[in-house]
Length: 201
Image 1 (cartoon, rainbow, N blue to C red):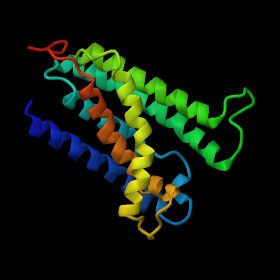
Image 2 (cartoon, one colour):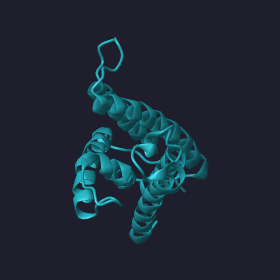
Image 3 (cartoon, helix red, strand yellow):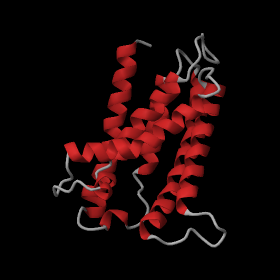
Image 4 (cartoon, one colour):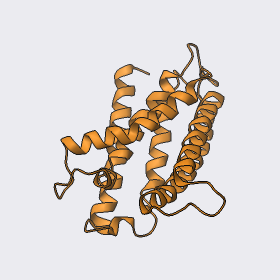
């Protein structure tokens, strides 16, 4: 696949994912106050699917359709599970309450969720898309770690609909969605070994 096509898929997917989040916040849940936090953020389902679909085309030089489908299914489950856990932990983190009685705080839960989804996506991509280097999971984890600072920087350049530039509004605006959709497929691509992926023809 041509580099220009991969870049178009990556950027187009990121903007599509961002648009899904913002559309739900703006027109389904409502922009005012904390209405966007009421109930589950259902746009996460197609967003996570979009991210792994983009990764399935950006990562390998060539992969068979069956292998790509398996990766998309496994990656989607991993991404949704990580989002659900991270969402709850983030609520706990900002509310200042403890994450249960077992001793795991929300920050630790976020780290575990990030590490688990990074390793899971890297292993899945290496199994069904293309051989990845052993440290590919670390690249994904670094990409996820960069999401929040990049989102905060973005809200300074592109303020929220009401003009706010704080961290909460960067999340409300969906900037973490945009940067996740860019950095996760890019990290998997950078972690790819030279050679042909499984199922390549």
